[in-house]
Length: 278
Image (cartoon, rainbow, N blue to C red; front, side):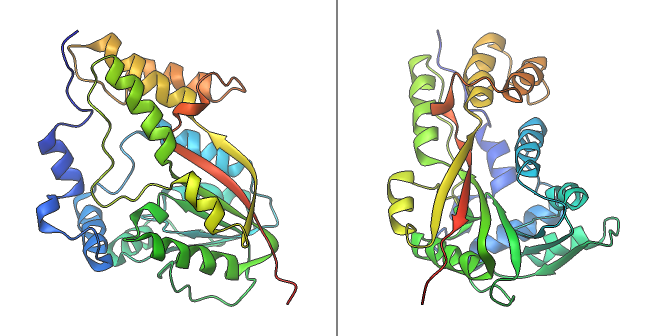
């Protein structure tokens, strides 16, 4: 079997994520710049719409009608609008002003507000929210140190025993997925240059005094079927997010059937706040 092309060709990858040579992955302002540019170009959304729907469906299951929710790193508000139907109040925050502008220009909902804000310095009082959500937000911070600062801020604004729904790219799951892709001569899935995937082996040790992981939601079935089986079946055609295979993968993944949990490049970690006795 001939070696396949990467899921995104280089020119397509650059069109979405920018030319790495023009940015600095260690600089927060540089990463913010690309998200403002993606907002203007209309490329800020996750291209795999079924993946986004699968993730949002899973998040909603952990939201209660009485919850006050913070969607930090909300982007242009796609998930915030959906979640607003399932909670008492939700505030969407993002550091990219063009994304917030886009979110505000969409329809108005009484229990949903958007504002600019920085996850490493949240402009909210202590113990304000019942739930905090991130969706591929921590991975867009420049350093592990910034990720830990953000985690402390989330801990601060959560109520006692509040829940942090951390939906982030997972280093171990991506590694497992790429190992199988290599077996079938598929190019590795390479995260955007400005991403810093969560390393489970380090993360939970570094945050053990702040949060207790009470469960994990993985999407390994979906990724195994869409990122391995799909490209093998359609070769030499280019894989497509709208292929019927992806819809079948969605339906399987939406059921309580788990045969490929180790291949989830994205996970939702359900974390309960550990409150200080001091």
